[in-house]
Image (spheres, rainbow, N blue to C red):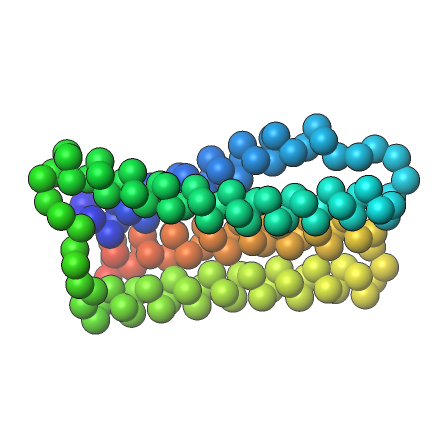
Length: 148
């Protein structure tokens, strides 16, 4: 298994753990009561904003920790260049990830069109944001394993 495959696996696992732990932490804080109240909107806004910030920081810390652990265990450095295959795989994973996010965005807007509560829109956006991140990592892993 090469560096890129290991990095994709670690990214996939950390994404799932971060999302699961964050949702488990935030779920008890959901305001019970009137739907579509100011408090509910504040909850969903803070949920998305904090999840975004936590994910970014966690991915940076995870990347640094992975590089340190990789260097200690293998004695090798992180590859300093990306060849054509790396670039193609990166583009394909970005395309698939973006496609999933756009699909989720369209479904979320569709939920508003069919007059679902606003909480449904937020849940769809959050779930498809997670799915898009997982899709990107899985696509990278697949293409590094099977080729382009």
